[in-house]
Image 1 (cartoon, rainbow over the protein chains, first blue to last red):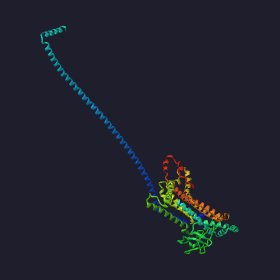
Image 2: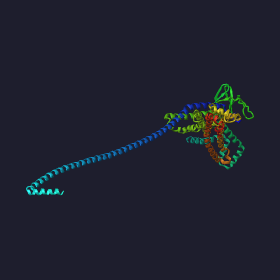
Image 3: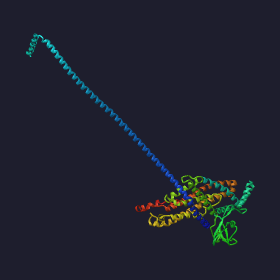
Image 4: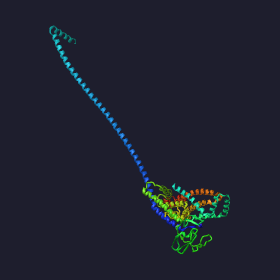
Length: 166
Length: 407
């Protein structure tokens, strides 16, 4: 210990202090500040890049979700449209069928009515002709029957008999 | 890592390069060495005879060499030839404050052998210290062999100051190039070349040392100090393992200075709660507050004191052990034969050097870590205090206060 204190070199201490101060100041200005600033800048850059990549990933995911959603929407829309079309088609067919049926029924009914009226007319005509014919026949028969006196008496007789019977 | 690989190479080179240095320092044993190379059994007994007579001498020389290495010096000596008394290296400027500045080259001391005459004042170098003396260079020693002569204030550019400047230059060049690399290619580009090694180290200091200890909100202000101190200590520790033979972080003046910086930064950035915890500890009864205050005040100083002692002791011990193990070649030559001594010494030194590489990093880490911990304790916000003070009393604070780790 005595030797240590005795050997203590004030000159060396003095130079060491001066050199250390100058070295710290010089290095701080020309080395440590730029180095640390660069290291910080790089670390910041890396952190930013990572954040940017993360953001891009999130955006990508969002975009993908969006795409999925749009696709699903489109599909739903298509399905709806197809369903609607099908319904329209069915409705059209049903409508057409119904219309045709109604039309047919109408035509049939009309035809039936025509047939009946035609039949009636034919029947009336037939009846008229039959009656005229029968009157003619009856006329001719009567003429021939009532051509002699005896036959006329017979007839009257007979008719009177019939009346008596009644 | 490239860094460790290079340092390992350096330390191996260091060990190999130190070998001739020590052999030159012991000419007596060099002679024995040559005898042994002859492989004559008769000569070995001759060597043993010599060894018993000179046993004290090499050990004392090794001790002197180690303590000399641990000290600062006024010249940069790479190796010396003791036989011819020649030292290979270069002298550094001496600056003395003694009635004005006295600046001259350390070569005038002739490694402590002659008296330097500057403007009519005489100075002599004795055990690494400069003393004022007369023309004859007489030094009066007290009973502890310490000269009682006047000691002028010595602010010379010593070996350690040169090493500090060199290391500062290395750090400055390394990290300004890293900063330029970012500027040139933009912050988002990865660094290239050696910068690729430096960047994780800076990140390590920021993310493992400063952030967790000081807290996210305030760590930025202290980053320049922590980074500078970390790299300064680490590179000085690593340079201490090279054959340059410098020992800066193992010098008490350097570690005192570093610890004082941490101390002042801690005290000046401390907030109200820190002082409150020191002088009027919340959450304990009043008598305890009075007892705790001096302990806490003492703690203010023991924390940085532990920093300076830890760094100094670790590095000094490391250098001493490495040099001692290299010296094993000479000390254990008789017991293990020359080859065996060299092999044992090399294996042990290699082992210790690898541990020293770890210690070099570990001490820089611990110094920075504890500095940031102390700063963190001084600046941290105890927001829960105000909320709990009125509602629950003070029971829970002693549990929540961070413990000082003992490393």
